[in-house]
Image (cartoon, rainbow, N blue to C red; front, top):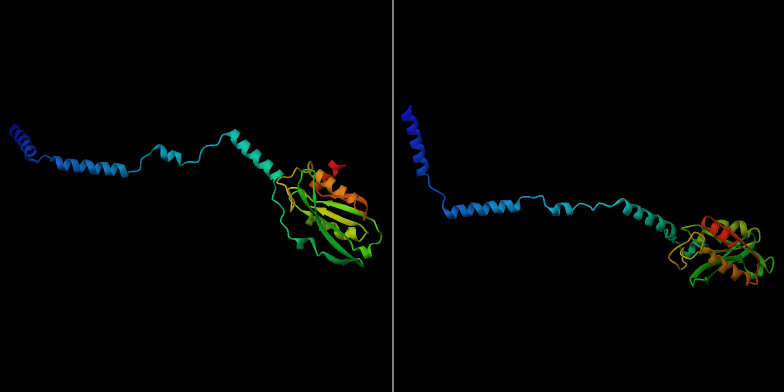
Length: 218
């Protein structure tokens, strides 16, 4: 038994001694291959973390929400329309010929306002001077909204003026103020109508932001 064990140990020793040792060249090749595998393997690094969306603080979220809310109020989508949406420039209604005059006025802040006036033609006016209703549109709208009241006013012998508030429709301006600055636009139109020899009285009809403008003006 002792001989067998010693013999086995001896043969193992001989086998170990007889096995060729790796050459420096082959060892270097293995090291290079190991480095290549290590370089190609995905590693968890800081760059992986940087690809994630940055975390937003609660205060920053509140600020972003507030800015979006304010922008939706003072810079709503601007109403887009064509002049065809204002109807024909000449038309017949209730047995009278009417026409539409389009013109510009400049408000107290130096912004050009687009205005339209619907009235009977001079030859068919029931009186030299007629009452005029100034229609004021709502937020994110335009003077084309005034078409909704045109028939009922003309049928009663009234003329109608509608305008694009500053910051709305085709008028100049970037922002609306829900009536605060729009009252200056109304004052500009009313002042123009008071100097119009064909206007006997002026009334205001407003919807939404236009109604607030009428209250600010009053």
